[in-house]
Amino acid sequence: MRILLVEDNEPSRDMLSRRLQRKGYDVTIATDGAEAVTMTDAMRPDLVLMDMSLPIMSGTEATKAIRQNESIRQVPILALTASAMPGDRELALEAGCDDYDTKPIDLPRLLKKIEALLARKG
Image (tube, rainbow, N blue to C red; front, side, top):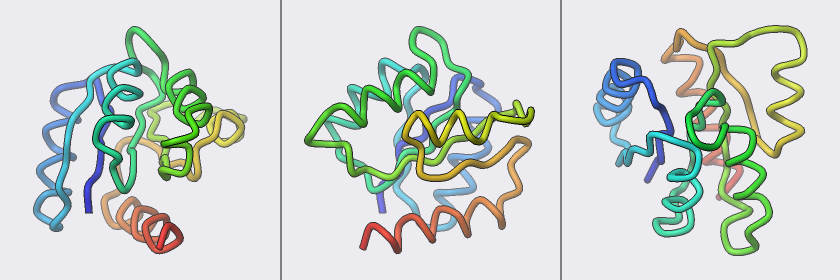
């Protein structure tokens, strides 16, 4: 399964990509929201892990752009954010994310959410 990991923080990106690769996922990296939209269109990943605080284009804007593109709108998107303020989950879901998880990453919890989204995708 191919995952597009959208994360601008290098230590977080490296740690999470290595952990996902050890679990058997093929991980590709994007470092900003605009790159996330382009790469989702080009590679058609099975899932996008979208940091919501990104340079150039926020995760919210990138998610909306993906959802507006007919050819990739069905790709599951899981929001990742260090911001766990009341209403943040709702904002991510309203933007078009399929699920939401907080940082620091709890890998077992994140893997369950990834597996659930991939199972729904079929």
